[in-house]
Image (cartoon, rainbow, N blue to C red; front, side, top):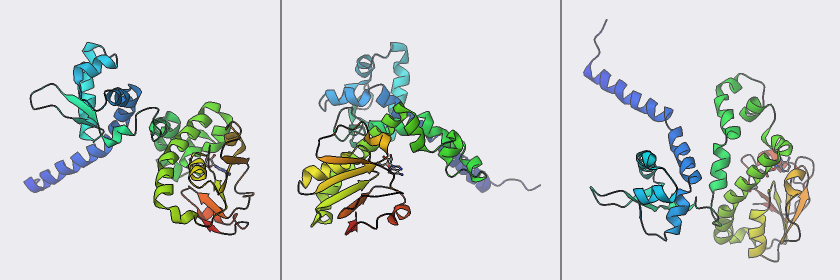
Length: 275
Ligand SMILES: C[S@@+](CC[C@H](N)C(=O)[O-])C[C@H]1O[C@@H](n2cnc3c(N)ncnc32)[C@H](O)[C@@H]1O
């Protein structure tokens, strides 16, 4: 049997490091979720840009002293991944401030995306990943259906709390994108008098367009259980329906989906373009 050379051993050790990196990547997202649950971005935000020391942070989020060292470890992980910054001097107690990443996770801000984080980290969304391998050998259309027996939007129809979680997650994701769309792609709306946002959820993207371009009549088409509880009488009109059966005609169709080709064939009534 050939003896392993130093080069082989080094290569294997490097490979093991990479495997461990892959195995433990979930720690990064789960740590971020914990930090947002604990309200760490909110506490740092309310200190108006001034750093907060580890011990003060522990007290502000009501952590018992015997957990402070674990909080330090959590923060070290999140500083390493760019979610917070440690601005203390060498040898002094850690002091933290927000970064552009954690600024997005402050609750109650217009552009906050913590609902999207909680949705993606929820066991409902995590469990399909557990059966991804088995899904390849199954007849189920998606890993979600393999894990839950139904597709996500059907499950949302059956569960009010999941429906709310999906809608809030989609809406906060869209608010940020809406700002970029109306600020940097104004050309796309020139000459448009009516627009339909297909699968537009609770209308955050359409509302931003309607407020920026008041001459455009904006309509959202989404599943009936999604649009039922949306407050009516605002700048956007809501239609409950199935995009695979009928899409009301409009000058422009807005699609924020991963697979637009599957819905193009239902858009015959549209005079103009797909944004
Ligand atoms: C990924 S979400 C995007 C939501 C919204 N466009 C946004 O960005 O906030 C997909 C949306 O499509 C809706 N949807 C799914 N199937 C649909 C169908 N057959 N007809 C109409 N809407 C549908 C869902 O309810 C959901 O609101």
